[in-house]
Image 1 (spheres, rainbow, N blue to C red):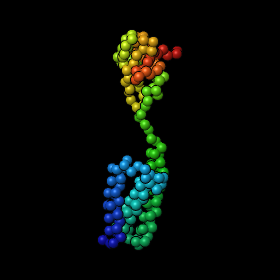
Image 2 (spheres, rainbow, N blue to C red):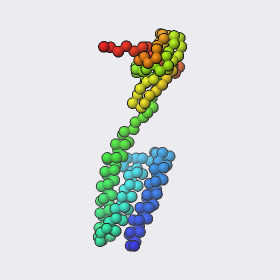
Image 3 (cartoon, rainbow, N blue to C red):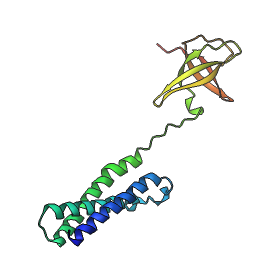
Image 4 (cartoon, rainbow, N blue to C red):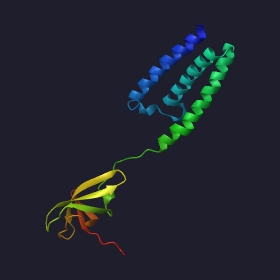
Length: 169
């Protein structure tokens, strides 16, 4: 095995291990991500150099300098594609499943535990993130039966104040 092959192979192993460690501990060192020079792109660039260099040395009879130049070109191209077509879209597609009670005002829910006069029942609200069930009372202390649609009017100390929903037809 040539010296350059050993360098590529050991680099592949070491950078692969560092990448695994980075994936495991990325949240702890989150502040390092600064554009194109973040650890993900640097590690992928080095990993692509070592992988493509090792494969080219094993599969071709090219000169070592040519292999290094071609490995740099391949790595640059793959890192560019990874950054612009995977990392940037993932960073901008951050979706939160968090909601506030106030954000549910105006939503339509369904009664799953009947709401008695001057008492509490339970409603369920369907969102894109799933079902949310909440304690509810009649807005005007009215009784609302099971499986009726309700409109969330207000929230008072975590209790949703609702009125029976009558759609405009």
